[in-house]
Amino acid sequence: MESEIVVLALGFIVIFSAGLVQGATSFGFSLLSVPLLGAFMPLKIIVPMLIIYSFIINSIILYKIREHLELKRISLLIIAAVVTTPIGANMLINLDESILKIMVGIIVTISAVSFYFGYKVKIKNEKLAYIPVGLVSGLLNGSISISGPPVILFLTNQSVEKQVFRATLTGFFWVLNIMTIIIFLSKKLINVQVLKFTGYLLPALIGGVFIGINFGNKVKEETFEKLTTILIIIMGILSIVSGIK
Image (cartoon, rainbow, N blue to C red; front, side, top):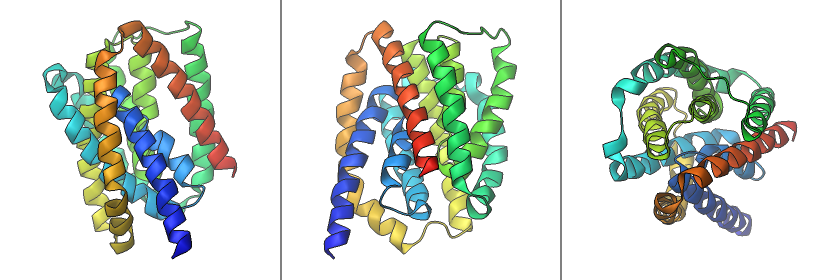
């Protein structure tokens, strides 16, 4: 009983902090939560719980910034990710997630450091580029609940305006969350234990998200881009560390 209280207390802190980051930037929730929660909780509880939380978060944020959402912009991205998410779910069951975490962490860190120092490759055919980005994102979403890196890196590379950046990410994540929850239910990855922890930590999530949304609306464009890049670097390093452990 005492050990469960400690787990819940630590989980409360992690979920609140990750919700704060997600509310402000529209990404980072799973990237921050997975490695930190992974230190004291099994991944087969963490991943389904975070998918449910992500759906709740993105529903809130999407409603707040819905006027900036451009569905045509991300239609190919969503379709591609939906196709590969079931494959990713099978990877969660059959493969060692540590290898995936390390690989993702290395790629994300190197890319983000390059962006920070001003190196970007402007892609002219943006619509077509969403297909490979979405395919990779779907694989990561189903396997380790981290669908963000490919999309975040792509939008950062394209220097997308702050509110469009947030709306694009949130709309994409929202659709992907629905698809993933359906897949996880069919594979019995969402069970009583997952729902128990999800319910216990829900207040931390809601509080963090609403505070983060208010903060994100006040941040200047240039500051937002720098904050985003630094956050991506931190997430990449955390992914590597959690994979090694």
